[in-house]
Length: 482
Image 1 (cartoon, one colour):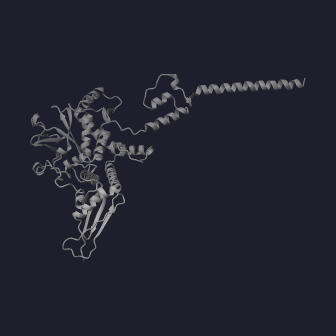
Image 2 (image 1 turned 45 degrees about the vertical axis):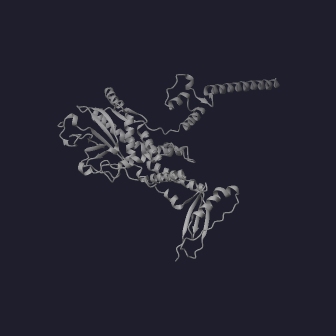
Image 3 (image 1 turned 180 degrees about the horizontal axis):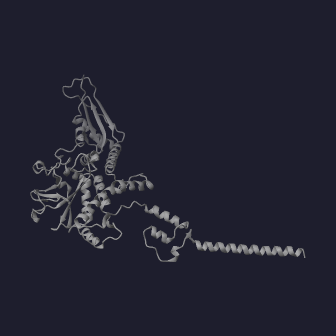
């Protein structure tokens, strides 16, 4: 069976011709650019130090934030909605201690010389949603009193096999920590465990609180929500690399040229190039005559066939846009973040009650569990570290109310006389105004009292007129019988 020679090339919008092999090079990463996974700073030290290796490379997971805007925005949005909307102390008893409140507020408002409590919690949640693990460093005074709080970058920390110690490596430096509440001392330089109080204060390790996104595959580490959508992140990166690398070097493909039974030689390429760059511009109906010869030594009877096929660039671009939309939706779905919450406007998306319902689902299923987790951390710190028993740390909730719909509802209730103006102020969380007119009910702009007085006056006038008519009739009838 004869093997057919098939050559394929592309005519670009500027008339240039490129071989198919040239185009295909851009569908994969260009040679010379590394695809290496970032190195693990703990490589070779897990067995030596007794540390547990995570299921995935934390450095690689952390770098995903830098290559996918939707993943980045979703992580930042969840961190902000969880810990960035403010906090307050809630009384746990009917008569809480004001002294305890002052102690708690003094710590919570100044947990760190350089960061606010919101900054620390936000950073921990960014780590939590990017690599599945977040770490607080708890700093105590010599007497055990809580005096400081710090965030430790999650990708720099590994858990020891005993789950009571943690090791951080940054550059050439190595530091040990101990689990919050672990009673023994740990040497922060060597990681050795000793009875409480036996290690000098200057060598004692500080404590760590580890929060992680649970996975059944590990007792030591968590995994981020983005993992099921990892293929979408990679696909979107490949799409972007293809677009950038190809269109920086070439124009848009307009035609595909397929030569069957012969090679696409330089002479034929030159004819095609001249036709698209010069001839067709002078005359839109000009004819292209192309000849191709079989290669030297080719004595097959296969006829030479040359085909030109127009390419729909719009279709290709549309498919790229659809691919990116699919990737975006998959990433946001893995995070559980509604598109508009991440600053993305989706054309044709439903609004009204559907948007409110999706926000409420996001609040209840994604944000509130994270807030509960961090609130438990803060309340443990207040209770164990400061002896606070009368107050509870709470985060502010995200606002899921539809303000415009609420205004329309209140306007309707006011128009039908169901609400006074002061009642509306209370509904909006405002202080009522001390003015008797604002406590009156109105019916479509008219005070009900005035309407009532008007109705009573009309009735009296009608009765007077009826009385006068009756007197007149009685007088006339009486006169007839005199």
